[in-house]
Length: 230
Image (cartoon, rainbow, N blue to C red):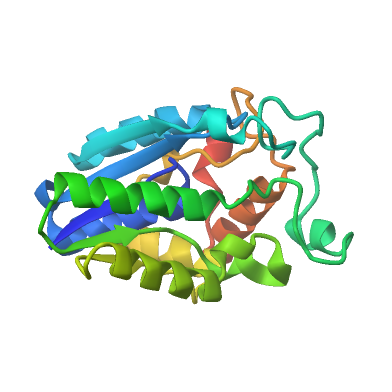
């Protein structure tokens, strides 16, 4: 069995990477990072360092031209500012739950690219696609493409389109972020090498939705977020 892990350089995807390496061995794992025009480009630098840390092959693609038409606040060309409030607060402000940092069908795009890559580099071999989506991201419909229903649908599409050779694996879809961090701590994930903040500063802002969620997840495990010590 081979694996392609979507690797953003953040907490969830890095925990996925650690899990895949533990289960399959570094020689059978490839990390895939996507530049889509995100303001927090620093996460890609972290993804590169993490691939080196785990000794896995790494691929990176640029799909930013596709998303240049979006005004999502997470993207460099957006006229919107990143909101400095929790996801729960943002979800409560609209009827459908979508937060301003939702990138149109991002996970669908990334999983499609990952499936195509898997079929290319691991042709005729069974491969698992790892994605670090978890229940906190899907809560209140903040990120619809992190939901269990979305993962099930994409998983079926990937299997059909790959002649049942590529399988989607979302190990944290039924967990919250605190549980993901707990898993990562057990796997001795080097969280000090990760980056999650949506802003592009030298240190995490501590107040955007992902910084807030991340800090809470580490606090729930009785430790301070290593990123806040940068």
